[in-house]
Length: 200
Image (cartoon, rainbow, N blue to C red; front, side, top):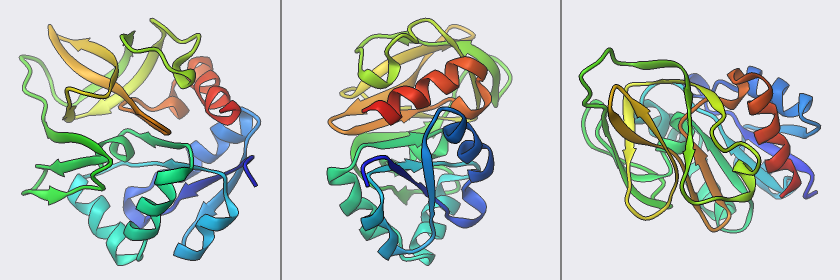
């Protein structure tokens, strides 16, 4: 069981196809999770995400996945990707104020930067609190595409810089990992990240 990675499928907010392919390329076995009952059959969880914080939470709620997901996160290694990392936070401020999963004490706010938003393209990460998922990836380049950022002061694993603005590019708290970038679009560095997650 512990080798099977549950990939959360929550409608419009989940970009699961390319993530599934990348995890399989890294040697993982993927099970798509569509229902609350399916969490029992997986050992790890990946929360994908594209789109808005508000849509993501309303899709999860509509699918009846919020409570079982929060329960599963307590004991299973979990990786949130892009919006999937953002919804781990307490609150999001995209299209109004929305409650998140509240597993990382943070808020998700618009990126206020003197440059084009969304921040898009390859950028390096500066690992400030090493963890097993980022092992061997210090100063690697990953693919970003986001207009909002996680504002967090306690669980920062790496920072990145965009036009002189430092933002949180990954978080880590106990068994929970989050990355603001898209490992599935980050070539070999992304595959290595998935391999690290599979090996946990």
